[in-house]
Image (cartoon, rainbow, N blue to C red; front, top):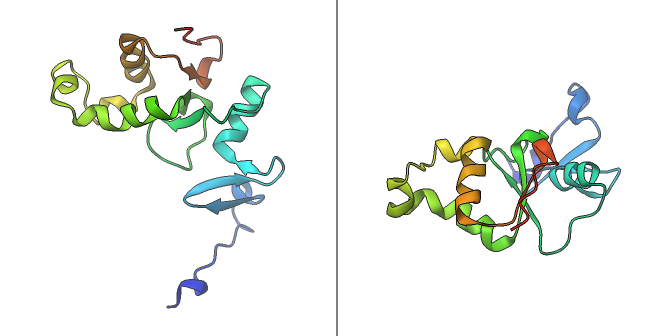
Length: 128
């Protein structure tokens, strides 16, 4: 089968009917941006800055529930993805599996003293 023969038909999937998958992420046609950034925009009431990245806590690119999304800096985003592989972080009880839980990720980010926004509770904004 040729690559261009792979097509997605959203007619039977109501949730995804108006969305197109790009690079594994869902796309919000109404706002003309990725769906996870659109969720952040709607939750925060503002567009994200270029210095802000949306992290999917459970690492599922199509899971755009607010409880699953964090707004962080690009550097912090890299740390989140690399931290579970660090021996020192593992010794503190952080693993690849439990870092996919928003409570554990909040705890980790708080211990780092890093600024972030958890969209699951937009009142919970680290001001560090």
